[in-house]
Image 1 (cartoon, rainbow, N blue to C red):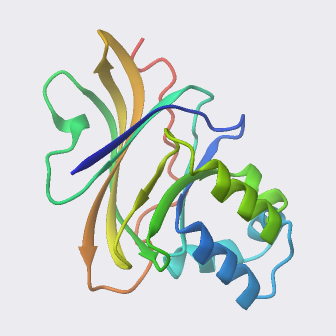
Image 2: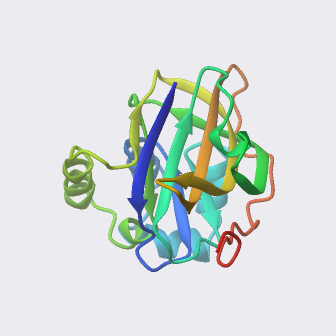
Length: 188
């Protein structure tokens, strides 16, 4: 099964975050973190803790481009590995936990004022079609991140693909979280 979303933007900050955002809010409350979760994550070790606990997966080096976002499940061949695609980045070793039956790709800006109200507003916006959110069974998932370019309507489009596989291992990322997923100029 594959889910595909087009024209996904990074809000002018070079990060995407992948995770169960309601689980992230629970993590914030349980660890008594401030509403400015972005600052807490960058000035302390709570961001590293969230990654270790499988709450969130940060992706750095995201160029300011419109992206095609894909979620690939059930052992299907990733689109970025199919003929005609241009793969630039392929990283595995990530793990995420889903506790609220939803996995979404979101931007860093939501963390700057991460309150119950802003979370509710974001969840309402993500009910609109075309938002990068999928429904998943609760549990732990191995995540492989692929980035590059896909041909859509005769043109190369920058793309990120998240290949998800259910796992029984309960631990967060084992990969280099400082890795930069830059794509600018790669597919022109």
